[in-house]
Image 1: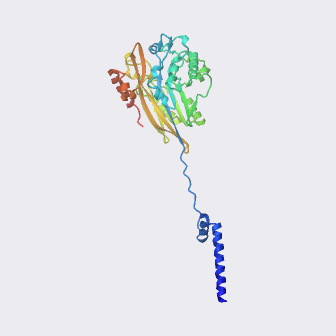
Image 2: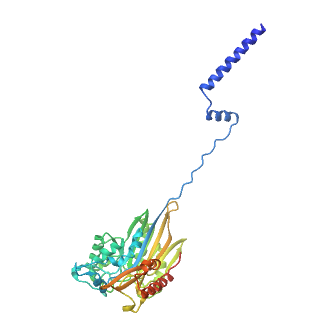
Image 3: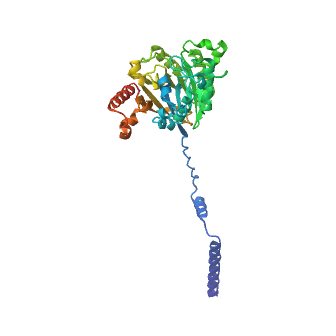
Length: 401
């Protein structure tokens, strides 16, 4: 009897093992099951998910600026093709074109007017240049031209209006002179950075009488501190990230800025201007960084002559041959809501005038010619000496980053 009970117990144990094994074979324990079982034995707090670090969004853009673009009669005659009876000024810009094109936005001072080729041409003191000058400026790569300068009314109202029309026809924009009432603010958005452009001139060579009082109030921007301050405020209201002021001021042929330039420059920074680009003296004047409320702002008091016939031979002033292109890199940090100047590059230029089957003009980016033998070999020893001198004179005036 005892033996039978033992057999029955063994049979029952065998059957239990069979059913347990069969259960686990048909429903195997997963990782989660094991974890659950472990948690039942050793309860613990759930693991926290790591918080992803969000990368700051930033964007950059570059602005290039140059000084006075002028066309005196020797330059106009040099560009004339007697065979086609047309004018072509594009060759003048062939060496600087790559620098101008490399920027996202390029701007210069167009210090002449184009009232129309049928009216005949003239240089100083009352300019009228061929419309082809603007075709060449567009070819060079410029996007915006400041037209508020002392020669804006050289050919009266019609000269001012036709200059704007030709600029627009060539696919560019202008600031400082206008066809009708407007707020005087141009805003360009590049790479999600909104840049406001303003332009003003100290005066118009006594030719204000060519416009009515009403027209003077909106067709030309004269330097007026209340107006400038108001325009900067409006630019900020339009959510401009950067405010650029192109201003025609100072004393001609003076290598140092006047007290008035220094004072007004500082005021404009305090009012909210971030970049101030000076023209009119026809020689290069210094640049500086002004830190206001923890933000760096840039002023160059004069960028000199980018192109003209003014030089040592006819002005007894070699510095009128010098100019500078300024390339400014801006960075916008979206998380901080800030846009700052992060780099400034200076490109000194020199206006070359030489004879080759007639008079020729070229704007030389001096650094390129000093660096590359192929370009350097194109100029004679006297010119080599002159451009090295010009290069050093210009860079000595520039603030270092």
